Image 1 (spheres, rainbow, N blue to C red):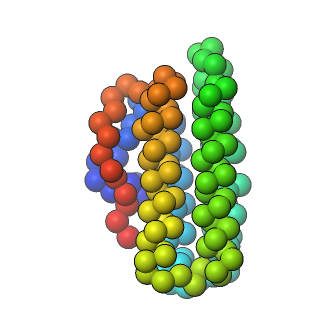
Image 2: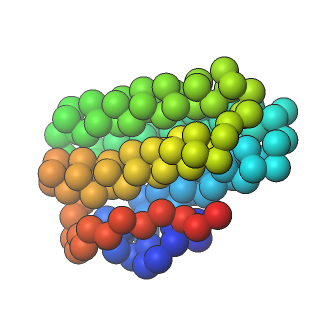
Length: 143
């Protein structure tokens, strides 16, 4: 479990999707730890793993939506925006070879986490895809 605080407040009411969100959160935490220990070769691999994994995760959500005959068009755009935002941030980390100040590291990692949290809370909820019990609490893992 990589979200700190009460991760159930980010539950969408679907264990598979909740599990996928946790997995992404853990990948972000791994990236943070690799920046912290300055393991730049592994950092590039972890970033690639995250970016490559996101479309797989999106497909899981899309298949669930199709199974319940949900129009996924709007949510697909939210996924593309999430992926694009993640790419911008991770490209910046790679350009700097992970050699970031504490403030830069915190800013990039907080941004990756907040993009995920916003996607879970606002996109999933506003699209009506999930939303069984949202209580928005800023939950960011603690390094």
